[in-house]
Image (cartoon, rainbow, N blue to C red):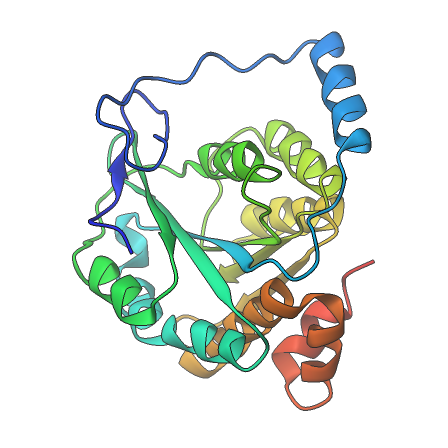
Length: 250
Protein backbone atom coordinates (compact mmCIF):
# COMPACT_ATOMS: atom_id res chain seq x y z
CA UNK A 1 0.00 0.00 0.00
CA UNK A 2 1.05 3.60 -0.44
CA UNK A 3 0.51 6.82 1.48
CA UNK A 4 -0.63 8.71 -1.57
CA UNK A 5 0.23 9.72 -5.11
CA UNK A 6 3.60 11.21 -5.89
CA UNK A 7 3.47 14.61 -7.55
CA UNK A 8 4.85 15.35 -10.94
CA UNK A 9 6.91 18.53 -11.14
CA UNK A 10 7.57 20.21 -14.46
CA UNK A 11 5.87 17.33 -16.21
CA UNK A 12 7.85 14.39 -14.79
CA UNK A 13 6.27 11.49 -12.93
CA UNK A 14 8.33 10.60 -9.90
CA UNK A 15 9.52 7.21 -8.74
CA UNK A 16 7.69 5.58 -5.84
CA UNK A 17 8.71 7.11 -2.53
CA UNK A 18 10.84 9.84 -4.08
CA UNK A 19 11.52 12.63 -1.58
CA UNK A 20 12.96 15.12 -4.03
CA UNK A 21 11.21 14.68 -7.38
CA UNK A 22 12.97 16.23 -10.33
CA UNK A 23 12.01 16.64 -13.98
CA UNK A 24 12.85 13.77 -16.26
CA UNK A 25 15.55 14.37 -18.84
CA UNK A 26 14.20 15.39 -22.26
CA UNK A 27 13.26 12.37 -24.32
CA UNK A 28 15.37 11.63 -27.39
CA UNK A 29 13.48 11.57 -30.67
CA UNK A 30 16.28 11.08 -33.23
CA UNK A 31 16.52 8.14 -35.60
CA UNK A 32 19.47 6.77 -33.62
CA UNK A 33 17.49 6.88 -30.39
CA UNK A 34 14.55 5.08 -31.99
CA UNK A 35 16.81 2.42 -33.49
CA UNK A 36 18.49 1.87 -30.13
CA UNK A 37 15.14 1.49 -28.43
CA UNK A 38 13.92 -1.03 -30.99
CA UNK A 39 17.09 -3.09 -30.57
CA UNK A 40 16.71 -3.04 -26.80
CA UNK A 41 13.03 -3.99 -26.95
CA UNK A 42 13.72 -6.98 -29.20
CA UNK A 43 16.42 -8.18 -26.84
CA UNK A 44 14.27 -7.86 -23.72
CA UNK A 45 12.96 -11.14 -22.38
CA UNK A 46 9.22 -11.34 -21.53
CA UNK A 47 8.13 -11.20 -17.90
CA UNK A 48 8.54 -14.41 -15.97
CA UNK A 49 5.48 -16.57 -15.58
CA UNK A 50 3.98 -16.74 -12.12
CA UNK A 51 4.73 -13.15 -11.21
CA UNK A 52 1.96 -10.86 -9.97
CA UNK A 53 0.07 -9.19 -12.75
CA UNK A 54 0.70 -5.45 -12.97
CA UNK A 55 -1.63 -2.97 -14.62
CA UNK A 56 -1.27 0.78 -15.15
CA UNK A 57 -4.72 2.32 -14.67
CA UNK A 58 -4.67 5.80 -16.25
CA UNK A 59 -7.47 8.33 -16.04
CA UNK A 60 -8.18 11.68 -17.59
CA UNK A 61 -9.24 13.77 -14.57
CA UNK A 62 -9.90 17.00 -16.43
CA UNK A 63 -13.14 18.79 -15.67
CA UNK A 64 -15.18 17.22 -18.48
CA UNK A 65 -14.62 13.82 -16.86
CA UNK A 66 -16.17 14.53 -13.45
CA UNK A 67 -19.29 12.34 -13.92
CA UNK A 68 -17.24 9.39 -15.21
CA UNK A 69 -14.56 9.87 -12.58
CA UNK A 70 -17.16 9.32 -9.86
CA UNK A 71 -18.36 6.22 -11.68
CA UNK A 72 -14.81 4.88 -12.07
CA UNK A 73 -14.25 5.27 -8.34
CA UNK A 74 -17.19 2.97 -7.74
CA UNK A 75 -16.27 0.43 -10.41
CA UNK A 76 -12.53 0.02 -9.99
CA UNK A 77 -12.96 -2.62 -7.25
CA UNK A 78 -14.35 -4.95 -9.91
CA UNK A 79 -10.91 -5.05 -11.52
CA UNK A 80 -9.46 -6.49 -8.31
CA UNK A 81 -12.32 -8.95 -7.86
CA UNK A 82 -11.87 -10.29 -11.37
CA UNK A 83 -8.12 -10.57 -10.89
CA UNK A 84 -8.54 -12.35 -7.55
CA UNK A 85 -10.37 -15.17 -9.31
CA UNK A 86 -7.47 -15.58 -11.72
CA UNK A 87 -4.39 -14.94 -9.62
CA UNK A 88 -3.19 -11.59 -8.35
CA UNK A 89 -2.97 -8.02 -9.55
CA UNK A 90 -1.17 -4.82 -8.60
CA UNK A 91 -2.42 -1.51 -9.98
CA UNK A 92 -0.53 1.76 -10.46
CA UNK A 93 -2.98 4.65 -10.70
CA UNK A 94 -1.92 7.51 -12.97
CA UNK A 95 -4.06 10.57 -13.56
CA UNK A 96 -3.71 14.05 -15.01
CA UNK A 97 -5.69 17.25 -14.54
CA UNK A 98 -5.36 21.02 -14.32
CA UNK A 99 -2.30 22.86 -15.57
CA UNK A 100 0.57 20.44 -16.23
CA UNK A 101 -0.34 18.24 -13.26
CA UNK A 102 0.14 14.50 -13.57
CA UNK A 103 0.46 12.12 -10.61
CA UNK A 104 1.11 8.44 -10.01
CA UNK A 105 0.66 6.19 -7.01
CA UNK A 106 2.89 3.30 -6.04
CA UNK A 107 1.78 -0.26 -6.77
CA UNK A 108 -1.47 -1.02 -4.96
CA UNK A 109 -2.69 -4.54 -4.22
CA UNK A 110 -5.80 -3.69 -2.20
CA UNK A 111 -9.05 -2.41 -3.70
CA UNK A 112 -9.96 -0.46 -0.54
CA UNK A 113 -6.67 1.44 -0.72
CA UNK A 114 -7.22 2.31 -4.35
CA UNK A 115 -10.75 3.49 -3.58
CA UNK A 116 -9.43 5.64 -0.74
CA UNK A 117 -6.90 7.34 -2.99
CA UNK A 118 -9.36 7.88 -5.82
CA UNK A 119 -11.88 9.32 -3.40
CA UNK A 120 -9.49 12.16 -2.59
CA UNK A 121 -9.15 13.27 -6.21
CA UNK A 122 -11.30 15.95 -7.80
CA UNK A 123 -11.37 16.81 -11.49
CA UNK A 124 -9.89 20.11 -12.65
CA UNK A 125 -9.88 21.94 -15.95
CA UNK A 126 -6.92 21.36 -18.26
CA UNK A 127 -5.65 19.74 -21.44
CA UNK A 128 -4.88 16.08 -22.00
CA UNK A 129 -1.47 14.69 -21.00
CA UNK A 130 -1.62 11.23 -22.52
CA UNK A 131 2.02 11.44 -23.63
CA UNK A 132 3.12 11.48 -19.98
CA UNK A 133 0.99 8.43 -19.23
CA UNK A 134 2.62 6.48 -22.06
CA UNK A 135 6.11 7.61 -21.05
CA UNK A 136 5.43 6.43 -17.49
CA UNK A 137 4.24 3.05 -18.70
CA UNK A 138 7.27 2.64 -20.97
CA UNK A 139 9.62 3.57 -18.13
CA UNK A 140 8.25 0.77 -15.95
CA UNK A 141 7.39 -1.74 -18.70
CA UNK A 142 10.35 -4.05 -18.17
CA UNK A 143 11.53 -3.22 -14.66
CA UNK A 144 8.06 -3.67 -13.14
CA UNK A 145 6.80 -6.29 -15.63
CA UNK A 146 3.71 -4.31 -16.64
CA UNK A 147 1.28 -6.52 -18.52
CA UNK A 148 -1.18 -3.89 -19.76
CA UNK A 149 -2.16 -0.23 -19.65
CA UNK A 150 -5.78 0.86 -19.28
CA UNK A 151 -6.70 4.43 -20.20
CA UNK A 152 -10.13 5.99 -19.69
CA UNK A 153 -10.72 9.39 -21.28
CA UNK A 154 -12.87 11.43 -23.62
CA UNK A 155 -10.45 13.65 -25.55
CA UNK A 156 -7.04 13.92 -27.23
CA UNK A 157 -5.36 17.33 -27.58
CA UNK A 158 -1.79 16.29 -28.36
CA UNK A 159 0.41 15.40 -31.35
CA UNK A 160 -1.12 12.15 -32.59
CA UNK A 161 2.05 10.97 -34.33
CA UNK A 162 4.06 11.29 -31.12
CA UNK A 163 1.43 9.35 -29.19
CA UNK A 164 1.39 6.63 -31.84
CA UNK A 165 5.17 6.33 -31.72
CA UNK A 166 5.04 5.74 -27.97
CA UNK A 167 2.18 3.26 -28.38
CA UNK A 168 4.30 1.37 -30.89
CA UNK A 169 7.19 1.23 -28.44
CA UNK A 170 4.87 -0.32 -25.84
CA UNK A 171 3.78 -2.83 -28.48
CA UNK A 172 7.39 -3.89 -28.98
CA UNK A 173 7.60 -4.44 -25.23
CA UNK A 174 4.43 -6.59 -25.32
CA UNK A 175 2.44 -4.09 -23.24
CA UNK A 176 -0.97 -3.60 -24.91
CA UNK A 177 -2.99 -0.43 -24.50
CA UNK A 178 -6.69 -0.77 -23.68
CA UNK A 179 -8.19 2.62 -24.50
CA UNK A 180 -11.75 3.13 -23.28
CA UNK A 181 -13.29 6.27 -24.75
CA UNK A 182 -16.21 8.07 -23.16
CA UNK A 183 -18.44 9.64 -25.79
CA UNK A 184 -17.79 9.88 -29.51
CA UNK A 185 -15.32 12.71 -30.19
CA UNK A 186 -14.03 11.78 -33.70
CA UNK A 187 -10.45 13.01 -33.26
CA UNK A 188 -10.00 11.08 -30.05
CA UNK A 189 -11.47 7.95 -31.60
CA UNK A 190 -9.10 8.06 -34.56
CA UNK A 191 -6.08 8.51 -32.31
CA UNK A 192 -7.13 5.89 -29.77
CA UNK A 193 -7.89 3.29 -32.43
CA UNK A 194 -4.46 3.68 -34.00
CA UNK A 195 -2.66 3.66 -30.64
CA UNK A 196 -4.46 0.45 -29.70
CA UNK A 197 -3.55 -1.17 -33.01
CA UNK A 198 0.13 -0.24 -32.74
CA UNK A 199 0.39 -1.56 -29.18
CA UNK A 200 -1.44 -4.82 -29.86
CA UNK A 201 -4.30 -3.73 -27.60
CA UNK A 202 -7.88 -2.62 -28.16
CA UNK A 203 -10.10 0.47 -28.32
CA UNK A 204 -13.69 0.52 -27.09
CA UNK A 205 -16.22 3.30 -26.71
CA UNK A 206 -18.70 3.54 -23.85
CA UNK A 207 -21.61 5.89 -23.45
CA UNK A 208 -21.30 8.70 -20.86
CA UNK A 209 -22.50 7.43 -17.51
CA UNK A 210 -22.81 3.82 -18.75
CA UNK A 211 -21.60 1.97 -15.68
CA UNK A 212 -22.40 -1.47 -17.08
CA UNK A 213 -20.30 -0.91 -20.19
CA UNK A 214 -17.30 0.48 -18.32
CA UNK A 215 -17.47 -2.24 -15.67
CA UNK A 216 -17.31 -4.97 -18.31
CA UNK A 217 -14.33 -3.35 -20.03
CA UNK A 218 -12.39 -2.87 -16.80
CA UNK A 219 -13.04 -6.48 -15.74
CA UNK A 220 -11.78 -7.73 -19.09
CA UNK A 221 -8.60 -5.66 -18.90
CA UNK A 222 -7.95 -6.92 -15.38
CA UNK A 223 -8.43 -10.50 -16.53
CA UNK A 224 -5.77 -10.00 -19.18
CA UNK A 225 -3.32 -8.36 -16.76
CA UNK A 226 -3.76 -11.09 -14.16
CA UNK A 227 -4.03 -14.16 -16.37
CA UNK A 228 -2.92 -13.24 -19.87
CA UNK A 229 -4.62 -13.95 -23.16
CA UNK A 230 -5.93 -17.33 -21.99
CA UNK A 231 -7.83 -15.69 -19.12
CA UNK A 232 -9.30 -13.10 -21.46
CA UNK A 233 -10.41 -15.81 -23.88
CA UNK A 234 -12.16 -17.68 -21.08
CA UNK A 235 -13.96 -14.53 -19.95
CA UNK A 236 -14.94 -13.73 -23.55
CA UNK A 237 -17.16 -16.81 -23.52
CA UNK A 238 -19.49 -15.18 -21.00
CA UNK A 239 -18.89 -11.42 -21.12
CA UNK A 240 -19.26 -9.03 -24.04
CA UNK A 241 -16.56 -6.69 -22.73
CA UNK A 242 -13.91 -9.38 -22.96
CA UNK A 243 -15.15 -10.42 -26.39
CA UNK A 244 -14.80 -6.84 -27.63
CA UNK A 245 -11.17 -6.71 -26.50
CA UNK A 246 -10.05 -10.11 -27.76
CA UNK A 247 -11.70 -9.42 -31.11
CA UNK A 248 -9.28 -6.55 -31.74
CA UNK A 249 -6.06 -7.97 -30.31
CA UNK A 250 -3.67 -9.49 -32.83
